Length: 87
Image (cartoon, rainbow, N blue to C red; front, side, top):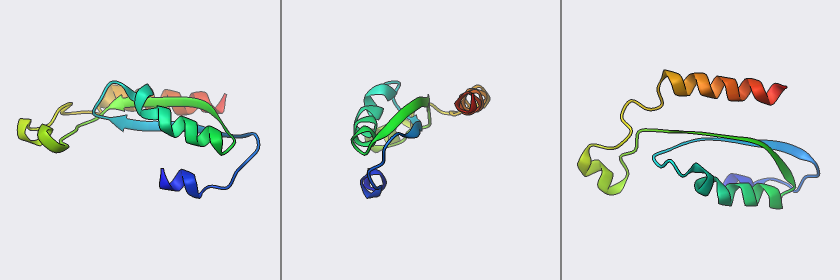
């Protein structure tokens, strides 16, 4: 978020959001970032997310969640997403 705040205001520039997370609720996780980018004048042209290994806080006691993520399917999905941005 600090990086986005450091960006100058733009007109009609495009941006995409690409992330991994321990949660399946990436749209919720992207909400603030999407808003801040929009406030800076960016048009969001796509969003991508996949589950990732997460051992934050109490999850560490459980050995983490989403072990083995991202996996090959996720990498293939990310490649398709990136290629789609070029269309």
